[in-house]
Image 1 (cartoon, rainbow, N blue to C red):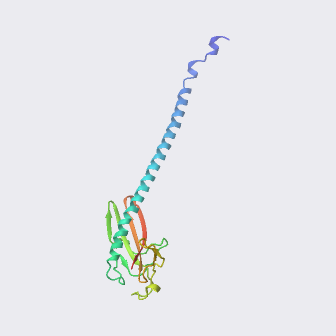
Image 2 (cartoon, rainbow, N blue to C red):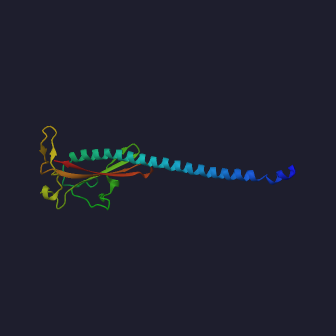
Length: 183
């Protein structure tokens, strides 16, 4: 065989390298776009988790504010109309009272709006004349730390349900409920 037969002419090989490089660049571009999208989703998810955690922390302000308001409440048998209800309110399917939170007192914590309502855990006719029959009372013995003896709440202790709604950036919403005893 002659050497001219073994060599191919350059004009037959001109476009093959270009096509292989373009295919490899396209695959690398798609991989880079997929990686960038995964990174963006991870960043958004961690940001949303941070907003939710901050909203839960802001709810503590609402619970504490409601607690102070209940302890200074003059008449437990009368609704205030915007934040305190003398009897248990109707609930939705999630266990939240069906009251208008937009008229409830608002506490601003940074970029978060914290609103709270309190309802006494009592049913029946008002005023409450028989707390043991009409209201939820805590009858679980508590241990006093100083004497290590069991101590129960007095029979006149009343239970209140505090419900806090927190609305924050990006329409972040958190709902927190807490029971408090006043005796």
